[in-house]
Length: 344
Image (cartoon, rainbow, N blue to C red; front, side):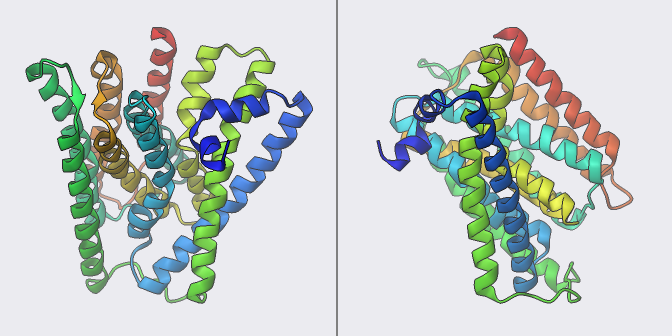
């Protein structure tokens, strides 16, 4: 079995870790967490360096380059899952990541750091964040009502989503350049590193974060089983969180290093990309059937974090998110996880 099989197939990694003794699993988890932390540090340093080199706001670097990097593994796994005959995994991966990114990761960030808000950029990018999610729900509803084959995200819809992704990236870059010329965040006090060092930090950190995230979940799942944690609880927590580990680790590193605005940009960008990139590419590979429970639970939960997030930006008067807003998003996420557990 080659490397890609281990990257794609969760059971392949699980079979390896099932042979480890408990003390070995605990050592693996400790080492992987250390790698994840170091990779996230390098990734944030690289993102800040890119912002200084390009004179683009850090929130934009987070919403474009960093988000593309942290969501690329999800897109790859989702497309391969569709090709391998489990297209439902792709839709659950994309929607579940949006809920975890905004509800859990950004909720925690807002509670801990009350991150600054660049309304000029966020008013624009968050429209794409919410609009792409609403479009996904409407596409699914349209086939639920009109298609005899049942609710499906088909290949034509996937092409539409990916085409919108290209438009999003182009206009986000144009907004960022315009913002730069009208007095954006440019940090001249920090000495910029040479570009090769910045790129090495960024891509080296990205590889470490992706590999460590991929190893941590199956190791943690096997350890939880050894301690007697029920399978349904594991599925509703560790596995659901697994695909969002890159965003979570970079969020923690960004807060520690004093750049919480990178987290804001990364979350908004990751939400857009999970809809347009992850789900769009997977639907092109293979039409995605939409189970009824998505209309009853997953889609409502997604909108219950994205709509308030957009409202928080609209009502802001002080240039930052509030801790109570993060608490709201966290509460929605906790309720969602609880309902996942109840309805299993």
